[in-house]
Amino acid sequence: MSFRATLGNLRAEFPLQDAILVMSFRRLALSNKKVRNIPRRLRALANWAADFEGHFPAGLTQESRYCNWKIPIHMSLVEGKQATAELKRQCAQHMVDAAQHLRLSRPAGAIDCRVVAAICVPCMFSSEICIYTDLEYHRGHIPLADSEEVETGRSLAQEWGFVLPPGMGERGLRYKVENWEGQIHEEERWYFGEVD
Image (tube, rainbow, N blue to C red; front, side):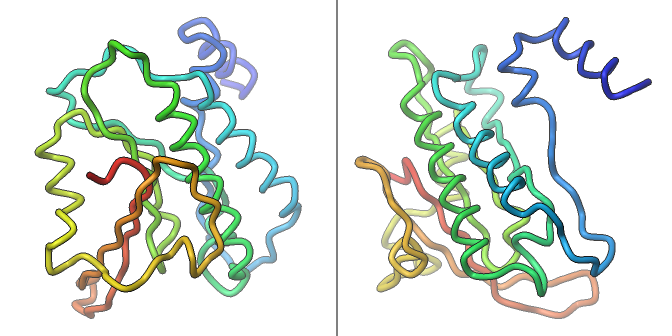
């Protein structure tokens, strides 16, 4: 099946805007080849973030707990030797912008939910935008401000120079992760949006 046929099937099943959000632009870095067309890739990410303006998924229930969208980029833009601080900053800013568009698009009668952009450091390819429909599940991922895992005295928004829209909170978590080889390393997960 060709790409055009696949896109045609998406258009038949979903409205065009939903088709854009369903399609994935994520690419793994399987080699150390230089990533080309970085400005075009950043424009595509900005367009993806703008697609959330006026869009809020219908049919969300508390039983679904959450829905999410992973960052739709080539992995080398945010991880590895080509991932500069400026590229990471721009990609994270687009994630924050997308979460803000989604938050502002929530209809007045929508289910009580929380919208956040989760920026992972240093494994930024895991970053995502989440809508939590179950508030207990939300609190399980984003502990209260007085929790011991919460990063205090720091702001990724200030360090990276984000422009945070009004009403958007920030909460950082630092934790240890064991990889498949048994090595333990520290990671950070920064939440921007409705963090309570």
